[in-house]
Image (cartoon, rainbow, N blue to C red; front, side, top):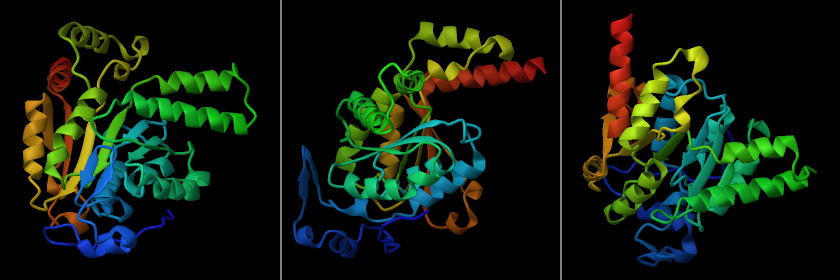
Length: 298
């Protein structure tokens, strides 16, 4: 994988001002930068490579918690930065949409373009600010793919184009985010986006999904179409109330499960990195119930 990037400085508790200056020297003397309604004391960290992207990407590819990546799985990355996590998944065969603030995504797009020839599905890059309507992501994705289809000479009504449009209307298979927990004042906005992307199932819908899951595999289509996608996140403890985010997520209805540190790559088991899975609590309970029934039947 080829990337235009700067590496982080392996700090032990704070985001480095040095790499802020290197990434965007003309703004490095400003205490914060506004991006729409977003004011950050760290406006340029998205232009730097942070190791949590490698930690999460390596674990996802090795553990395959959703099965093989070449289905392709539909992946949405929030706070993608230069794009190393999402591009790794795209190279593995996933259909990836990369999102970050508008002043970050030009570099993301450049990196996606560099690697797109080796991806089964070209990654989509679009600006997105946490807390705003997530429908904007799908709209931007659809617009970009329509432009690409026009460039490739496809006409409206083309069967391949119709199939792609149907795929765009499906929910994401998984949401990923790496090293996005460093400004606690925006954790609620991040959760707002996650709740839009992963709404809780009403009891009736959950029961219907459970009934469908009990049918023989040959007569049952994938139940993921009605289920909320899981969320995988990785962060490094940097004293930015990261556990506070987990508590807020649980209060918002998510079940938070940590990947055992011994399952991470050996190089990162002692670095203070944590990989977590978030999913709607009702959905997790349903899955546990189905697993118990399957074990009892066997």
